[in-house]
Structure formats: structure tokens, C-alpha cells
Amino acid sequence: MTEKDFLFLHLRDLPYFRALVRGVEAAYYQTFNLPAPVLDVGCGDGHFASLTFDRKIDVGLDPWTGPIHEAGRRGCYRLLVQADGSQSPFPDEYFASAFSNSVLEHIPHIDAVLADTARVLRPGAPFYFCVPNERYLSELSISRLLGKVYTEWFRRISRVQHADGPQVWQERLEQAGFRLERWWHYFSPSAMRVLEWGHYFGLPSLAARKLTGKWVIAPARWNLWLTEKFVRRYASEEPIEDGTFTFYIARKK
Image (cartoon, rainbow, N blue to C red; front, side, top):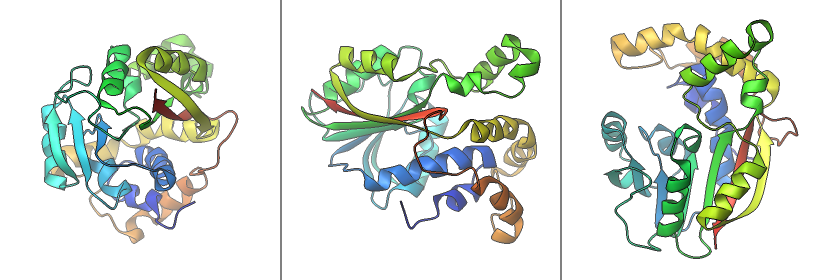
């Protein structure tokens, strides 16, 4: 699908479980039409946009101070705005396209954010986003031993408010003023379990982050070759019926 090795680009900077799913998602955007001006809803620290796009994104929107300042240092946005996605300071029909990469699942007031995103988009503007679906929680390996207690704990530590299927998202989108055009599942149950265990095997990366400010101290192939060899088998961009994440293409009505 793409010539860029997004998996390795993310592995250089992130814990492997985050790099695995972000590498897959970054590849999808290479085929999308994102007319300017473009809005990134929930830009975070800007890492994803800095690796995914070869041009600057017009506006990055995020409510958190620390991440948005880090995004500023990356220089991948023309403008960064610290604001809640349900109350963005832009006029109606300002943007020609928008995307939100693995963000909407974390937002409690999701309906308000979708409504405001629709407000600032022009009629016919595309909106691309991806979120985990219900299999994100049902396919957890340790839940088979510990049951719902572990499932709820994992939901909390990953801050997932919404792990829903396409029907639920279609209803939300319709109510907000969007038309759902296409969706597909990706990231197999086995890949999801690799992500799950990465939260525990990735603890050394957390220690490195606290001590040095970097998740990966030596971002070179000689240091990452074994990790890359292991995770690459799970980094499939192909849609899969029982995938644990879902990508959506919607359009402003």
C-alpha cells in the first residue's frame, strides 16, 4: 500500500505496541484526499502527523497543554490551538477536511465533539478517523483468566470510553451531521494481544521516558531488529473481518 516503512519509523520513537498499530494506521492516510485547510481533531504531541504526512497540517486542535507544546516543537502544523473539540474557535464551514487518529474513543462527550467537527467542516468535506471496536476488549488474553474485572481495568488504563461497532458510530455520525461512506476492520485479534502484552513488556520504555525524555534510547536498527522482526508479522494493513479496530470515512452532509 505504501513505500514508506511506517512501522520502523514509529518503532524508533515509541513503545512497540503503540508503534505497531500506528504504523498500520499511518499507511492508510497515504491514499486519502485531504484538501486544505485540514483539521486534526486531537493532535496530541504531533508525533503521528509528523511521520504520516509530508506536508504541514493546517490546524492541530487539542485540549492538553503538555502534548500541544510538544507538537509545536515538532513543527508539523501551521497552527496549533489548545481548546476542547466540542468548542473549537473556528467559524462554521471553515475546513475542507478533517481527521482524528485513535482519539475519539477517549472522549466522554463524544457527541458534542462530533457535532462541532461537523460545524466547522464545509458541506461535502471528508472526515477520516479510526477507533477500537468491541473486540478491542473481548479479545484480551488475560480476560479469559480474570474475566470482567481485568477487562474493565484494561479499559481504564487505556482510557477507552467507547469501544463500539459501526452501527453505533453510524448513528452518532448521522446525528452530528455526517454521512458514513465506508468503514473496515483491521488489526487482528492476535495483533491486539501483542498490543495488550506490550503494556507490560513496555515498562522499560516507560522508565527510559521518565529518565531521558525518550521512549527508545537507541533508535537504530541494530537495537530494534529483534523487536521489529517480532511485531512486523502482525503489522498487516489488510482489512480483516474480525479486526479489533475500525477505520471510518465519513462526509459532512
